[in-house]
Length: 302
Ligand code: C5P
Image (tube, rainbow, N blue to C red; front, side, top):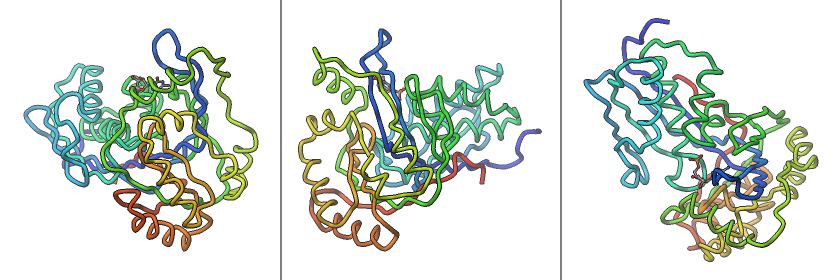
């Protein structure tokens, strides 16, 4: 593949964790997970265009909270890919954000995966899927899933993916909170809350995998669980009110999304998504609410 003549834009989905089982802290500080990811139809777009040096810009809700220096996962992705190929990271990356920032929906990971794919096409590197997945895993635990999308079980620290079958469309409402929650802080709180207890080995329950395979929303609702939820609620007790408001509005179930503070509500159909989103937005327990569906495709060049 030769280098792209013009800018390359990649669209990347957000994720929700329908089962986030967290094991004890490992010697490297990470936690072994059984992490069942579903990609949802909220997307960031990353555009790569030739430039004299690496620069990053960002627009959209929460853009002012996104770092534009080399800590940005999109910038890190460009640097990593360029270093791997011994070339200059001469690229301008523009991120159009729609995934909540620091919301537990893998927005930063989406930007990393998007930048990797966009730079690979812009520079004509033609990396294999396996090479891209390796680079994603170096960038962060959730980045490989942002590349592949759909539904998958993540083991190890979440980066080792096994694709899962999904037998229908699931409808969601996401309640967005003011401010973010730091993922390391939430894992730290998990360690504090579980100190001195026997943390079981993380597992994805068969009932959950069956519910996904059969597209059965009530069965999936009964199996939703997030081991980080007590830690996120401990750091943000007000999220309990958001969870109660979503259930009162008719959601089948609600959980904290990943490390939070976004809360995710599974609803029975698209109409219910519209009414639950409206009720949550009016409840005063969240900043705003968004309806979305899953599965969604992974990072895609537009
Ligand atoms: O891999 P990533 O950069 O997304 O991880 C962010 C932080 O989340 C890590 O530094 C660690 O504190 C925590 N984490 C963890 N166990 C995992 C994944 C993330 O403790 N499996």
